[in-house]
Image (cartoon, rainbow, N blue to C red; front, top):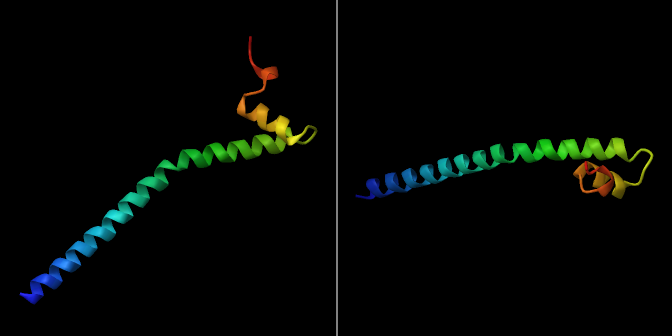
Length: 71
């Protein structure tokens, strides 16, 4: 009887650990696109802020500056 309890505990523990690995893998895969966007933002701001201020470069890279809206 005690052997079955120990086996059940190990089975549940293994299932829990496997589930955590799957969940964290899915989170890491979903954050990949955010990583690409952040890398683009960093390089864009670095290039645009050479002769201008950083807030101006951030607005330009985000596309929120009225100067860069296509009319």
